[in-house]
Image (cartoon, rainbow, N blue to C red; front, side, top):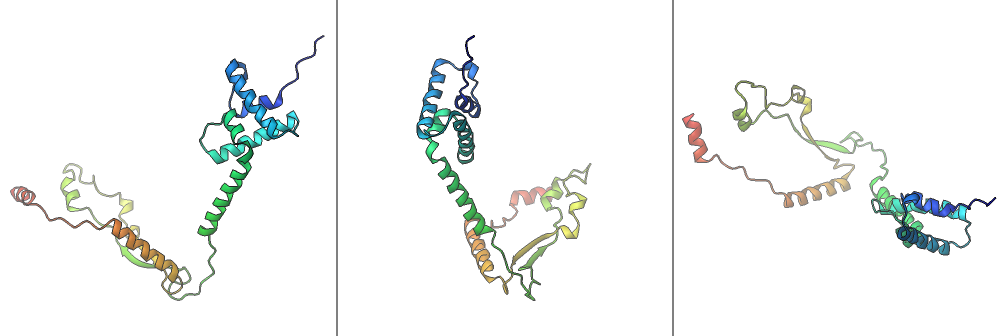
Length: 206
């Protein structure tokens, strides 16, 4: 009785992680997979077939983590085989550096200016009613249309602007002021235009 053919675990795993249907492979596609797998075996000569299959799965996960939406193919996996761990470590280091810069612990404050919140309220604007244009465009039949929802017309729904406390948080306040200056230079306020004479005449005629 002839013995069954031994399974090629690393080939099967490579096809699995790359989304390849082995039964649908033609000669050219199978040859590309075999060449890519040969490069992986050459780079990891001490691994048995089952061990290589597990490494292929791990390398594929690293590839997707580093390359994002890039298509995972046997050729691409073989091309980046040796550098994937280094790329993952580099990516993690960059993310940690970003987290260290943004999530900086702040010591408690007993500031009497802000009450320990490190932020102070500098401006409050109550909710504004409908503008003149909105009033003109309101439907005569349905006057409620065009107005804010009643839940949005409460005094506590006004606009608030907060700044870092000048007493206990001056460094952050300096950054906020500089950012606001840059923003104002890039986005200068629009001058309020006057009503044109044609619009004024049309309103008088009405």
